[in-house]
Image 1 (cartoon, helix red, strand yellow):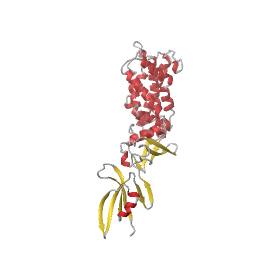
Image 2 (cartoon, helix red, strand yellow):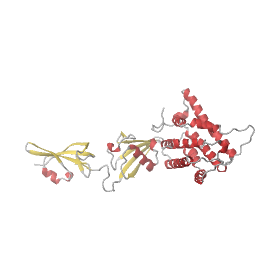
Image 3 (cartoon, rainbow, N blue to C red):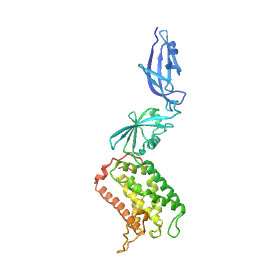
Image 4 (cartoon, rainbow, N blue to C red):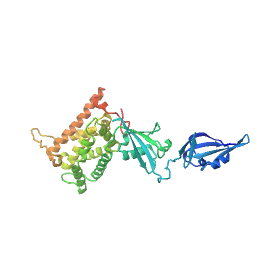
Length: 376
């Protein structure tokens, strides 16, 4: 009598007694001789044995690891979520990148040492490989959306699978994070010392600020990464800056610069304050970004910068030198101008919001559902 084999079901389940989520296949066969001669049952384990009409029927559970399945003549090599054993556990994922700004698609292959446990960590891995900020990514797997706090293993993602990544635009992720790190170091030093004209500053702080001025850290952040407006890449940089904690660090650094009066501040500290004001000005593109700045005291600090020094009527302070050769007159004018521009931006927008009138700038760029930014 010819042996027969039928696949009863193919489903995702938890293998009892193992504690691992694996894809299992329940196969019912009617002949032990067929089992012994077939390679697809190399890792079988019988779970039930029944007799019907004098024929013994055995049901087996086959795990997806190191197993080949047969379904209507199609053979599929089994894979596990930890790799296939041939590449030292390296996970290879195919990313289908869909840019919502340019409406273009591309495919990129990334290799990870292990599958990240959460979607948030998976986004961070994609950020490092594709230079796409994690806060503007929207991931899905086989049309199933992946939330940030979700356990990736629940989605049964395995090596070789394809993940769809919808994103606003690529950004300058490494550069922005590097400037945030520099701000963090300067903030830590300023918490331990208060430089002024009489006290001076430590050599370490002087080196930090001098190198930043020479390398134009603040200028690049304000004018290269945050400007011009209505640019998807610049907007992605701004969201990336806020999501990585850069805004909180910068606002705390800004507040420490106000400990001394303008006349007692060193020139380099004045220049640092001016640079932060320009960053705030160009960062304030959309209402959620402005509201995040205001909640951290940005409005009050701009007013303090505006009233830091009194200009005597008729006094000439219009020496327009370059920033690297800035003198007291230049930095005072620029600091007042940056404070006034940023302050007017907040006031004008507040008036427009009170009248329920949105300018074209508010609707020009899509709002990203980021947990780091307050929404309407």
